[in-house]
Image 1 (cartoon, rainbow, N blue to C red):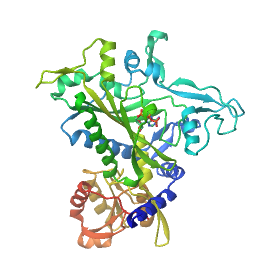
Image 2: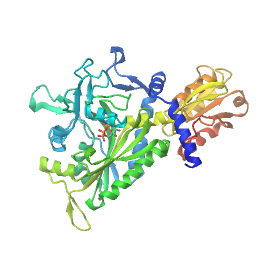
Image 3: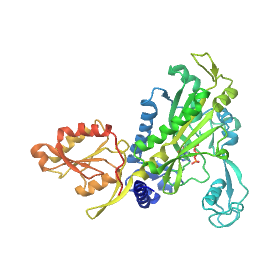
Length: 468
Ligand code: ATP
C-alpha cells in the first residue's frame, strides 16, 4: 500500500470514529435542523420535520442538483407533476402488482416485523448461514415471507369505494413518463434530452429507520433521460460518472463514495442495468442514488395502457422509435444526511472542544455571520448595515447573543463558513475581521470589500478541508 493510501485510510477511519448517527441526530435537534414529527403527541414513527437550518440546507442540496442537471446543461428541462395520479398509472408501471417487499413477522415473543431480504443480507454480510432465519431480536421463529405492497392507498372524493381508490406516488418518475408527450411538444428539443423533477414520494416501508435515511415520506430528485436505444449504454455510463462527481464536487470525500452494480437477481423488473452511488454512512455502505437503464419499459407500458403513441421521430433519419431511458434517481433527504455526516468533525482548539460542520459553502445553510464584538459604541449600527448589505446576496445572520467564542461555536455547528467581527478598530478605520470556519484564520479587510470577497469565494472551487 502506498503512503498516500495509508494517510487517506487513517483520515477516513478518524472521521468514521468521530461521527455516529446519534451525534448527527443530537446536533440536528440542538441546532434546530430536524425534529421528530408531531413531537408534542409523542412523535410519529420515522417521520421528521425540518426546522430553519434544515430547510436551508436541504434547499441548497436541491438547488445544487438543479444547477448541475438543468442550469449547466442544454438538454434537460424541469417538470413538477402532481403527487396524485390516475390509478391506471400504477397498473402500467407495475407498481400495483410488483412494488412490494418480503415481510416476515416474529412469531416468538417480540412479534416484530422485518424485511426478509434485509435479514438475509445481514446474515450474509456476517458470514452466517441463511437456511434457517430467525428473529434477530428475540430468536423466535419467523412467519413465511409474504409480499407487502409499499404504496399508500387513499380515496379521492367523498365516496369511499374501489372506484375512488388512488395512491400517493411511490416515486416521482411516473409523473415524468406520463408527461413525455406534453414536454416534447413544448421543449423544442431533440433527443437525447431529459426531464428533471424534485418532489415528495411516499412508501409504506416495513422497516424505516436510521433517522432520515429511510422514512415513509421523503423527497426525490429524479431525471428521466430519453435517448435512442443504441445510445443508452453510453448515456448510462455518462450519467453514472456525472452523478458520482456531483457528490465529490460538493465536498464528500471520494473514499466515502462507491458505485455498486446490481447483480442479475437484484435488478428491478424494468431495469436492464442499475448501479447505485453508495455512501459510507455510520451504519455502513448504503444507497444514496440509483442510476438505472430502464430501456423502453415505461413508455411502452404507458402507451399500451393509455392508448397514446409515445414515440419519437428522428428528424434526420425519419426513423420512429420508443426512446430508451436512463434514470438517475436521488434522495434529497438521504443526500442531505450524507452531506452532514461527511462534514461532521470534532476538534480541540486551544484546549476547547468544538463541533464543526465543514459543509461546502454552497450547501451551508448560512454563509456568513456578522458579529459585533460589543453591543454598544456604534458597533451594532456598523454591523447591522453590513449585515443588511450581505443578506441582499446571500443567507446571512446577525448575531449579538453571548460571548464571541460562544457565537463562533454556534456558527461552527451549523456550518457557517465565514464570520465577520466588528470591533473597536472598525470604528476607527472601517476594517473588519473575516474568520474562516475551517482554517480559523482571521484576516483584516476593509468593510466595503466584505460582500465582494464572499461572493467571489462562494463562486470559487472548494476542496474538502483536511479533517482532524
Ligand atoms: P432502498 O433499497 O434503500 O429501499 P430503493 O432502491 O428502493 O432504495 P429507489 O427506488 O432507487 O430506492 O429510489 C431512489 C432514491 O430515493 C434512493 O436512492 C434514495 O435516495 C431515495 N429513497 C428511496 N426510498 C427512500 C426512503 N424510504 N426514505 C428516504 N429516501 C428514499
